[in-house]
Image (cartoon, rainbow, N blue to C red; front, side, top):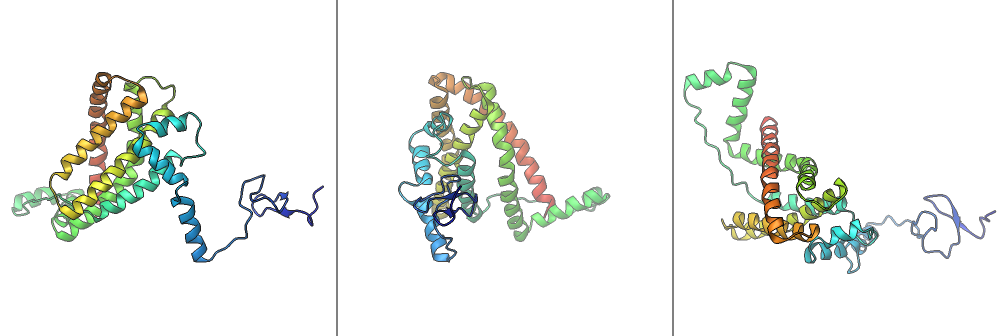
Length: 270
């Protein structure tokens, strides 16, 4: 029977343990009084996530400098040292879409609204009238800005559909893995790395306004994908290339459908 005088009670799991323990032996919670001062909370966050031995930096080092190694480590069961694939993706995508929101949109739309016959043809139904109003709004500077913001928001949500479908394509075309989840982990890691690269390129674009950034983005995605797929699936260069070409075609079709749906949804929500 535990003595409350000799031991303390964990506020998390309510088990008793020796006060000399730094962590609760039952649930692992740190044996420290709760400090709600803002200074302490900020310091604790920075210490946990940005010191040289933190999970985040350790995960990022492996993600950036050793292609596919992070996925292989995770699937081999070495998970305690690294951030989980979903959490890693969420952290990186947050920064990616934040930087993207600062990037000016480069689309333009010019629709002639003159002509009574055209107007009458489109506005003779309630749906047609609504669509015409949305298109007219989209031609204004405010409408373009609002549409761009809604596109980013909806696209970030659509990625949760795009990533599993991409993993399914890899599962169909690339051999050597027993479970779909293994392809999904690879896709999450690779997409996280691609977002890091695109974030840096978007920052460069904000500074330089260079037109060649779009080409560099595409080239970066292709190179990173080739290296990761070759390393992870242990294929020859030729084997990786033809599978990657087939996968790219299917993924672009999926992306096209998702992008179209996001565009329509964004337009109708103006």
